[in-house]
Image 1 (cartoon, rainbow, N blue to C red):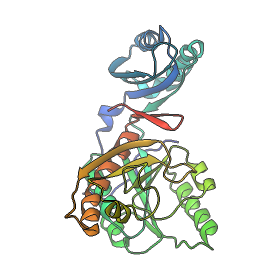
Image 2: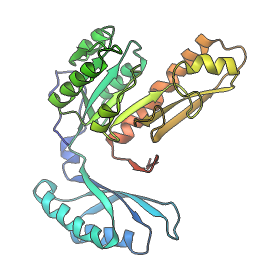
Image 3: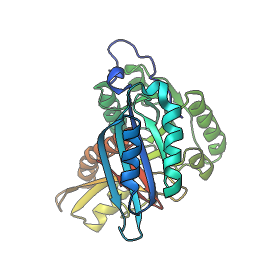
Image 4: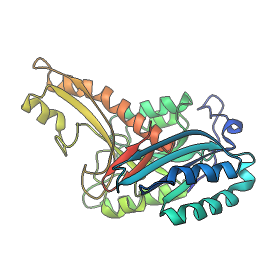
Length: 305
């Protein structure tokens, strides 16, 4: 699903130049690795008079593995030639068993941010958006607590307080999904949203829900990772951004980072250090998703940065 940019008040987040992006598109594909794949894609784009501005590729094994590619290109009069481009790519892809799609840089993805009470990840995303550093637009903020409503108002974004209890979780998720549909959301970001999503919710947005976990997964899965890290006496703490799946904290990992700590650091010190790591890691993962830099395969990601 793709949508145009949401209108913003003066002084709100500046958009990348629509003129500069009007003719830019990206092909994301994977297929069995064999001779001729790169040549076929390049030749097809040449036949369309497209100019390739970046091409990334990775093979799990050149001898019988799987090839992943991201091709970014400019095509004159793209808006008038999309059908021609897509049909031609489908013909090129079929003989080589390519699984892929074309995405258009001008179509900025619409983002819903889920939060609870902690604001550091939310603020980082909104600051980067306001600075024009995200190729997408937050359009709604949803929370199970009312605490961060003022931040949403500062950025002129709608805020929905949807309380969640064990008894009301199905009704709450139904309401949240209604909101996402009403705002035509492309990406859901869990910016320290302290609730576990149901399988039904996750299935509505496969590989389109990004979570930040305050641990260097797979260590300390679940709740209270900083307390457990302190008890274990770790020397490194980290954070992990991953796509959400039905299995808690086990979805494909997009980005991770760590920072060294020592025996002098208390649990509160670990949390303070961790907040910085969390917001940086989540912002990177969101930016890469918005720029179509991520391909998923099995329970892994290939990230072209």
